[in-house]
Length: 477
Ligand code: UDX
Ligand code: ADP
Figure (cartoon, rainbow, N blue to C red):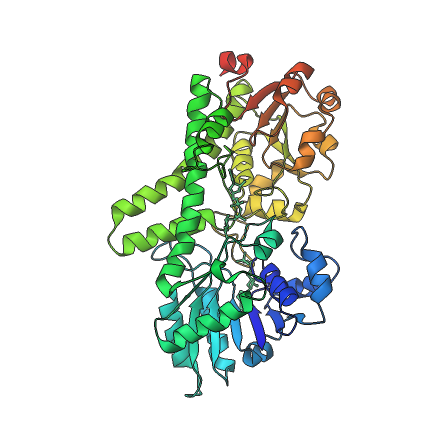
């Protein structure tokens, strides 16, 4: 059997590496139109950082795992074609700011149709709005010259989280495969299930109809994001009342009906999925006339925007209502720890907010490259998921510096803002950093990871998200 995957990104790369590792008799080829990306996958420095990924790639690459730009050859030869291309949010036209732009998906479908001389199973891996499979089916059928070629479309949404992708792929809570309720649809489901059964217990391989599988992915992300927005809403109330959001979260998380996960208050959720998938869900709801349902879910995104704005206002308010000309060290730019990914990271909106008020942001992140930070801070909303996006906001960059050293970033700064929960931030010598900073020196902990009592002892004025406010901040704000 031969598997091809279109799209060598955060989903396609790690997923195919795991399939190759666990199924040595299957040849797996990951293809992409981006030559640089494929070159990186074939090098010692992979294009994405993911703990444990390099080891697996090293073991399988050249054995039964290949990365190539020859899309036609490998897609043409494959029995199963996974599609994990970008699905950006539309920026103009009908559904702008909500609907998914399926340009890349359609491009992939046309490619499959044009090179297929044998029947194939086409697997939707990248999140797409409900009923996309139907549209893709039509593109495939109408564009394939050979009448004997049959395409069976499956939805097999990916639930891995970045930073823990390899672990999630190795031991998933479940694998979900959706397919048509026809005999050939069920056969295709069984074929794909067979691949996963190499390492995943059968009872964890769930099957569903196509639409259920597509909707399950959007719903899972909406539910997860909703928990974060819910706890973030409570974090604002905690600060206003003197409660402690960690204590509230712990108390509710011990209720087995609620559960302890995804209750960390933060400066906001980021990542390529949550906002995009909720906006998609809302668009689907609106398209079928369910405005109230769309409004309900949209509030999860609004609360996330509010949290980022609230953080910016807290920083400015605490620093005597002016950050103009002040250097602010930003620790962490990735949307979460253990990844170099910055897609929809809350750091973008926070830095833009501070810069708009005249601050000079000096950014340090252990994994994110300077070039990426500059791109993110000069790109308009929703542009990140398009190759070669524009940089219409380049004026932002005049007040941005990127440092590869956390000490240099804090040198001469008035404040440190912690925006990503990287473990190393916990172990810095904050007493030494304090000496180098302008007084009063502030720390704004947007992830609640630092030892706040110790920082106060050193002399810092500390803002800890969702915690009782430092007496200085109560008076000052
Ligand atoms: C998410 C889903 O978890 C995954 O199943 C789906 O396939 C893709 O989207 P990912 O975006 O990689 O994965 O990261 P996740 O761990 O879900 O975190 C998303 C954001 O929420 C991050 O910015 C994270 O910092 C934030 N978060 C998470 C919180 O603010 N608080 C929490 O308690 C948990
Ligand atoms: P994800 O996080 O869903 O994996 P990425 O943006 O990281 O998304 O990866 C998507 C990849 O798909 C990109 O590397 C892009 O170049 C690739 N891609 C998009 N369209 C096509 C296509 N028609 N053929 C091959 N690769 C494509």
